[in-house]
Length: 166
Image (cartoon, rainbow, N blue to C red):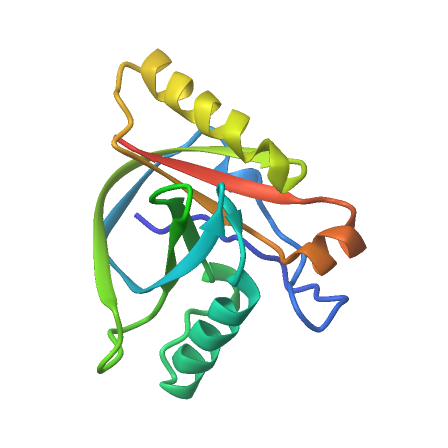
């Protein structure tokens, strides 16, 4: 089962393309050995402190290894591990030597949200409730922030795709 496309071919900023999130809302998706490279960011009370530096480093590593996903399938999943640390999973086409390679396999329920990062706590609670209403208990909740803050401001939308592992 192929994942829905996440981006259009329109890129007005030279950074993030316009997100295409319609195919992601209220879906059940399956990852079968989906490849990622993992990095960690520091947080202060769940507020990321070094996100830009870590994302730049991950992007340079992936592009330098020619392991990037097609633009319409790009994906970075974020998950808070604690109030002080978050996990970042950058989707790759293949493992990268000497990198933090991980694979995800499993079923995920999805929702699309639009709004500022400060709403993430309520989105998290909503995902737990959504999974429960579907008859499941969420194991992990990941957030896929589809654009950087500058591009979200430019496009006037700040879409976040939430994935609850069931």
